[in-house]
Length: 122
Image 1 (spheres, rainbow, N blue to C red):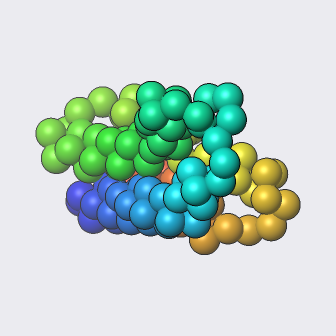
Image 2 (cartoon, rainbow, N blue to C red):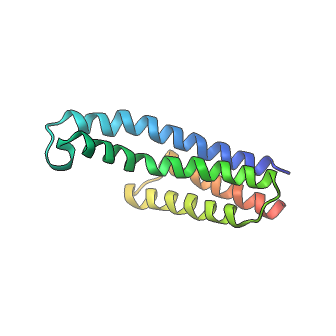
């Protein structure tokens, strides 16, 4: 049954898209509007900061899709285990950094649980 892997993929993609869109508007655009110094003073520097900020989103979406595609192909469980580690560590890191639950972290914990359920059921 691929439902659990599809749920995990969907949750990971939702978190990735929301992280990219919200962080661009709430964090990066205001940051780049301020007088720039150091790394942010150059366009390449700003591009690097933007790319580094997007890396978690790309990882979450790619791992979510990987879990689902791996299940479709009856592949080994390694992809799912790696995805669970990344999803859970991201959620826990978010909780530690913010010192409160965050919607993205909670969704990543749900993606972790859906991936674990997929492993158990299949």
